[in-house]
Image 1 (spheres, rainbow, N blue to C red):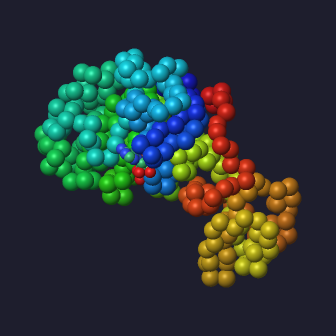
Image 2 (image 1 turned 90 degrees about the horizontal axis):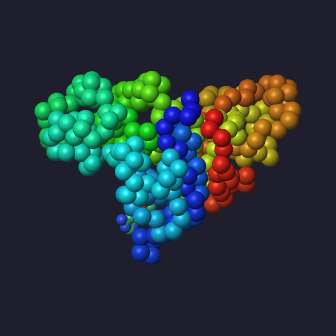
Image 3 (image 1 turned 120 degrees about the vertical axis):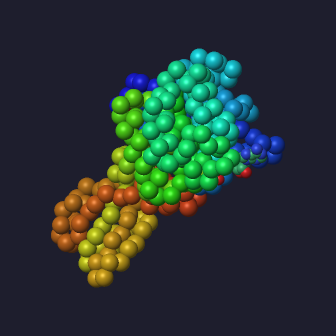
Length: 306
Ligand SMILES: Nc1ncnc2c1ncn2[C@@H]1O[C@H](COP(=O)(O)OP(=O)(O)OP(=O)(O)O)[C@@H](O)[C@H]1O
């Protein structure tokens, strides 16, 4: 699903807050019409990056292009860019006033959808945002973030305050609307296991730099789970980078990181172990816990949209 929505090119982007360097020479690309997971541990620069892309903040140096143009004071581009944060501080206090505002200001805003989502999350449109619980404020922000349908929609950990049923309702609603109305979506998070199936591309930030930027499937293919009798699984994993271990009675499941090797399938069959796919969450924890990873790319080359 590509070609609809705004693409983003970030080149050598540095942002400093006084002596603190939040982003250091970051280069990456977000293809139009994709869902990208922007991942990183706390304080790695995710919000700062999204704020610069949304033109809330000027970079210290480097450049950002959204749909081919500098977004700063650019009404055409900004009309198609939405950055949604958890607390809904971008919204009016009265929910209906936010709906009225978005209807006037954002041509693609779907009020019916917004009202249906508010109903799903049991939010009274006549309520005041300040009277809602934290989870309801998150759900309000997330609902309007979906319904606004900006060509580039960035959701910055918007679902953190929501309980599990609400989060799953949000993921379902976002995916359904994305399939019907393709656009570019960036989801920032450090909680990955619930949403990793949605990502087509993944950017992982670490200490203000790009640790890795690639297709989610490509990243997943760099890890394998090995399941079988403990001795056999251990024999298969010998000399490999083991990043996860789970004992299930006499059975052992190991998660190994690294590109598959020729002969792996035959070797697994000989040993009587099963090879399977890996969770992005496991790889994320491994990659971001370590000082350096061989093979991780420090930037993302320009790619034709897939
Ligand atoms: N307004 C600010 N003034 C000074 N330092 C800041 C400011 N905003 C962010 N920082 C610092 O910049 C770095 C990156 O912060 P940022 O909020 O972008 O990270 P994040 O990845 O979004 O974190 P989290 O997952 O915790 O929300 C952190 O070290 C943070 O302390």
